[in-house]
Picture 1 (cartoon, rainbow, N blue to C red):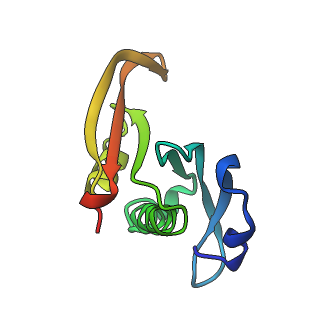
Picture 2: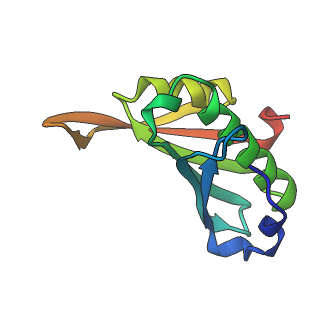
Length: 130
């Protein structure tokens, strides 16, 4: 995922990146960072692997690890957070695999396919990632 163009991105603006497979350059999703606070050295990330053929193959975990590593090193962040809905168990497992832990729950805050779900807020401190 790392691209030399990352160095040209304005840090505080955040950025959205396309995610491609290394083997055949198939576009399989996007990831981003936003809500950058250079004083508290924090940011929020997100990821979506929309191409279902590439689910459960480690792509999401690889993208998260790459993005987190880049943000901690290049921007000297100390904390990264994200959120998802409680029904997205695959994402929660991937985030935990990358070192994120659940920090909060917003009860019935998401409405997905006609049902209410909790919003799961997860965080990762730099000292816990390396």
